[in-house]
Image (cartoon, rainbow, N blue to C red):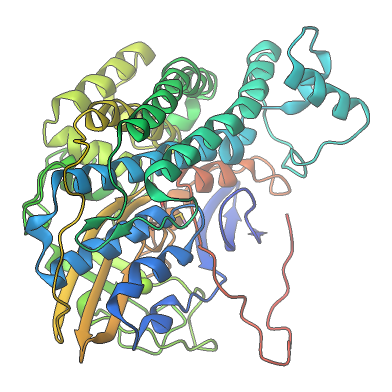
Amino acid sequence: MAKIVIDPVTRIEGHLKIEAVVENGEVKEARSSGMLFRGLEMILRGRDPRDAPRITQRICGVCPTTHAMASALALDDAFGVAGKIPDNGRIIRNLLQGANYIQSHVLHFYHLAALDYVDVTKVATYEGQDTALNSVKAFLERGVLAPFVPRYEGDYRLPAKVDQAAVAHYVQALDMRRLAHEMLAIFGGKMPHNAAIVPGGVTENVTVDKITGFLWRLQTLRDFIDNVYIPDVLAVAQVYDDYFEIGSGCKRYLSYGVFDLNSHPDLTLRQRLHLRGTTTASDLTHHPLEPSKIREDVASSRFRSPSGLHPSQGATEPDPHKEGAYSWVKSPRYDGQVYEVGPLARMLVSYTADAPKVRKIVDDTLTYLGAPATVLFSTLGRHAARALETKWVADAMAEWVLELKPGEPVYVDYELPAEAEGMGLWGAPRGALGHWIRIEDGVIANYQCVVPTTWNCSPRDDQGQPGPVEQALEGTKVRDVENPFELVRIVRSFDPCLACAVHLVTPKGRELGRFRVS
Ligand code: NFE
Ligand code: MG
């Protein structure tokens, strides 16, 4: 028996520890631990509710737009304007979120996950004129390999030419991400932490200049998605096709839906691009979403607040030394069951709800790969779903931007209520995101966020059920416990974000833990 400890897992956001007990070359038990304490929910208490979209964006620099959105939706609901958002405001919100999706998904594939499959050292044999590749080659010749090492020595299988092209695209993807950030800044003021998304709509007016500035960048990105990103993901998938069988996990999928197509006052009835609901690998049937079934357990989490609360009644009371707890992440569950969230969950929920465009791109991809739908429930299925989703969203954005109307309103005014409650259900790049607010005496009495990585990286719940990442690791065959590349490939396919937060140290700086960097 061997115990593998990967702490921290690199090339993700935030501090995640993975422990795996390996017996006879197979993971018998896995634990996923969030090692940072996030105090944002406590910081919000007692503040003006309108601060929430600004403060919650500081949860994370990668997906701030999505926290602004979930927060604004919760405030729209609490302020009674959810049904009155003007079309321009609704569309600009979608465009801001869409720009963040494209940036985040390209970041995840090229700069975080691809290095699990692409061997940069093969650039050493490159003979050609590409400036980026020749720069990488020059670094390799001088023995400078960062940021591509340290890494686990694994089974890198791509032919040298495919490998070299992928490294060139790694560099090109940096430019693409800049374009996506610029696109977001056109209507959002800046990235990260846009200034535009507010309850009632957005603060940025529509002009022809902004539409054209947005559109040419979007068209450049669509070209990259269609001709570089998706082909690269498929090239990796064809060579590493055993990862269509590895890392399945709980096989239950949940989506709140995302990208509003109208402004129905009830979020659970609002028409969205991605549909809301749940499905499972075993029934592949669409089930409607019932937000009342969401609960957060804390049996294995470092909180003394009661377990099993609905987020509208949720509580955040840290207890760093709680017996039996091994994570700062809570365990959200739906109807008492473990659910995976993210692009794969979103695509499957829309697929089973019969969204024709999703059916077509997913079915076309499966035909191209000559594979059945069951390959989707896997490590590579997550990468493929993320890439296809990027195309689906970018294509929709090209239609939305042309629906904007210069001179028309972007915002509706509201009265600040003294007492109110609100719920904001949305889809972050990494999955279902919910914000819940309760306002008393005109200030925030309680604020709860349940973020995608809370679902995916959750520890064991009150019933002892492991979280989605833990389940995805259990049963995995590990060839070499010193180089557990299989495990990091699985973990990274979820695109975890343990979110920017505070390291847990005492005011005197006393050490509370030691970290082994692998
Ligand atoms: Ni920090 Fe995020 C996304 C949110 S975390 S990146 O996407 O919400 O799961
Ligand atoms: Mg929370």
